[in-house]
Image 1 (spheres, one colour):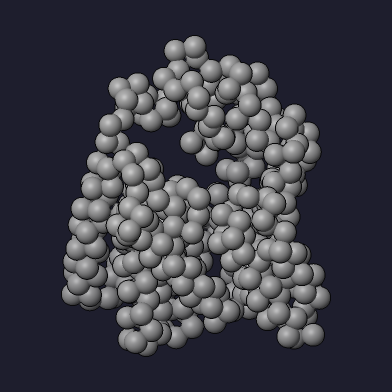
Image 2: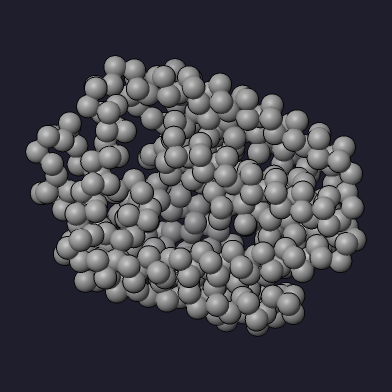
Length: 387
């Protein structure tokens, strides 16, 4: 039935919101209502008979990224079942299923730009809520103590920053490329500004770098579409760049203040080790050497580090869950096979997105109407992926 697709989208959106807000993205015991909603969304999307709105040029290249996502999800779930600490690794089984459901809905059911713009507004709304919560945690009555970080609706600053970067990239593309009215773009601009300021108060050093990379990717794509290939006006570029510079300056001011507060009174050992990162990475390399091909099993790094950390480690009571480096984490958990599948997922989507970007802006004529909206979604996705 046609309405199954809409119902599937609502179920997946509600499930995602539940997991992000009430389960902080990682607390398994609180995820069940959200996971059930995701499961319902998957069943409804499978029953939907809506024909996907996919450009003919995108049908061929889009097959590879879909296969890559399915293969990595299956492999991650299998390595979770084989993990020495399955009681914690089971989270990866649940997340792999959730990824397949949400991805399938976006790839095969909610393929129209109107449907995907609804998702963008959900991202922005949740981004605003997180940014406001982070601001209250940073500057409110319960101001963060020295050394503490803020997480918004999440439990950790890195999760907050990662989410805000995604919302920021899609919001910027919506403003710059879509054909929506000035009022909607003004609201979107306010949401984007709040998301950027939220990144500033989060205190994630890697998040600052990733956010800058995402904005740079967005800027490069806009120049390519509107000016180098579309005959756009440089005045618009100058105005947009000026607004981004002002926003970046505000974010930098917040970031400097946040980092000073975060590392106030920090020990010499913590500072010299990059807040422990150097020790985490050295331990991760030793763990990778033990099982380089398929890894040690999902979520095993936490226990391996505690048992094998350097005797001179600066903080004996620290119990890190992750390596604080996604590529090392994948190698620890899933080995070179897993990292190869991750590379296939990233490369597949980058090439498919670049192909859609080139096809949508290759005529030498500025895109109009629905083509602009599809390009906005493509650029937002590529910028978020770069970040």
